[in-house]
Image 1 (tube, rainbow, N blue to C red):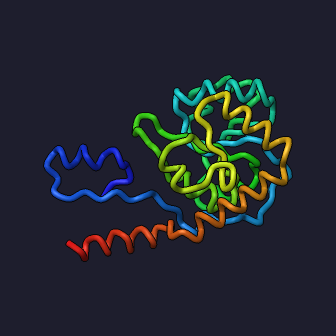
Image 2: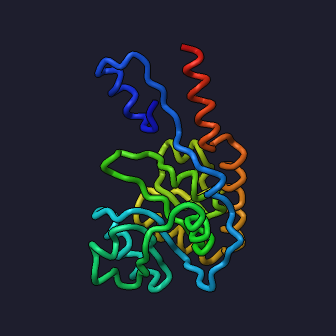
Length: 207
């Protein structure tokens, strides 16, 4: 079983007799709409690990949207002791704290790990499950999971992202409706870890 679709032909080529692709998932005990509220509301936010190839986009966002963007995750402050101008850096958020943090952010960025060649990630499910507005990289798997501009916003370039973020600021009610639609789609389409376990067990039973 693999959550990387590109691994399927690679594993078959290496002699694995049977390979099954499965999507990642979310845990409804942790990833759900939070009713704990913070006095601060960020226009843009990202909850995830530091990666060198993620820094430049946040330098751009900090310049375009000064003091409206926040990052929550490990190693950011260690790797960037001087910070990123216009961007608030904070520590990691896990379990229910993740969902509370998502509720503090209007546009929740879903960024993929280039080293893993990700085309979706756990955040692809966790963010909308927590009621956050999904703003993520455009991939075939993201397009399969959520409908662009109806249940999420997908971008192909830095300029696309900036234009989307300005639209969200201009039309906040529409953004809220899209976030709610994304939440409904993910939470009613069988994407919990229990759903994945049933999917895997069903496949094993067929062998």
